Length: 247
Image (cartoon, rainbow, N blue to C red):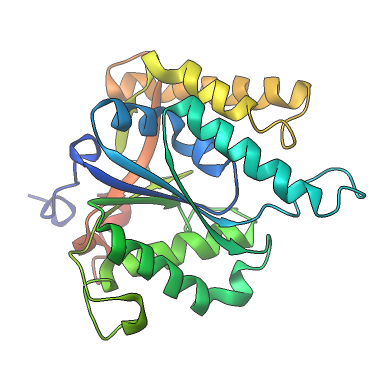
């Protein structure tokens, strides 16, 4: 047996308490909407936790503070399209997560310790060429919290330690799990189209075309027509386990 096979990859669809951490409104939908919809249909309790207000996500230089309210409403509509009902906002300003990493970590620990998830989701912070600092920062914070949330002396202000959850990274270059979302892909499209400020007009067509093409490529790996891809890791994979990248 190869070293990389000594620790099994968790079964994402067996999870019943899930937190999907999103840097901005729309990231969970792009990366994982089909899988989140499937988990909800299977009876999982899924909570969206959006780290930033999305205030920089406008192509209109005169949008001003109104863009925050717009994006909140879009996020609520997108989540409803997927079938979700639980949504929390961490309240950080868009494009500032790296400047507030310690405070962000405390908030992430608090949510994990309060909700006690089996699984947390986030963007893969090790995705090559990922240029958005909010994606890299949140993914890294969530990964660290997954292994350290069980230690009560780490961020003690966030509550007592809990069992360490597994992690599913979306937007990953090294997927090891492929989830059949064929029957739910229309919900993913509807959720993405709910973010009208981010994908106006033809942009919505382009992003959904790309995501469908990507899902078609991943589909055969799940034995299906369409699939979403994740790097799923247990807490054991996330510390002193150099084979994790190929697990």
